[in-house]
Image (cartoon, rainbow, N blue to C red; front, side, top):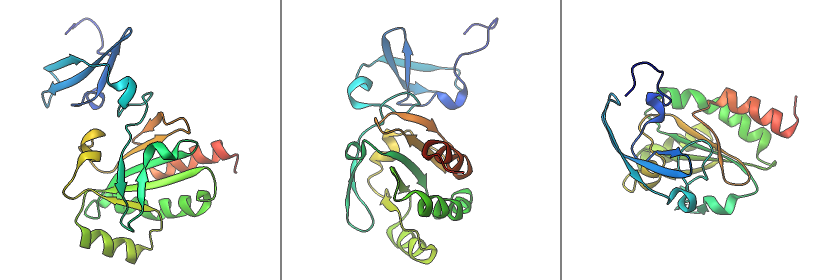
Length: 190
């Protein structure tokens, strides 16, 4: 800690399993106190192959079944823009995003764009909510196996990741309104 200078990392950027690059070395945050005053960094180059959960890194691959039973593998979506929306039916800010996300999905589902919901919820609540709200994009349930939530370091909801066609995270925690603006720019719509 150097009291004479501003820290380079904000509290929101410091999270367990997050990575820090110093010159050509990568370090993984193995332990971080809640106030960020103490942390343990481990040298870890696995981020180069496996990917990470921060802007600028390759997104971590996952394979999971959607609520409808279809298999989703993130790496197979290369060539498309992908928006991962970590959410839950119990989360008010998440529910408030649904009408905007429905509009975005309707407008861009035939473009080079994929929207995936990753819900920290129970099966019945999610199934009922998706049906009542007429949500048509893929939903992955993370009720017992929370491996995707863990890999992406999700601790609050909603948490989002916007991934480019090469599989790299280009934005994190952008809300639906910001996503709409980015997609307009990308696909040249007004």
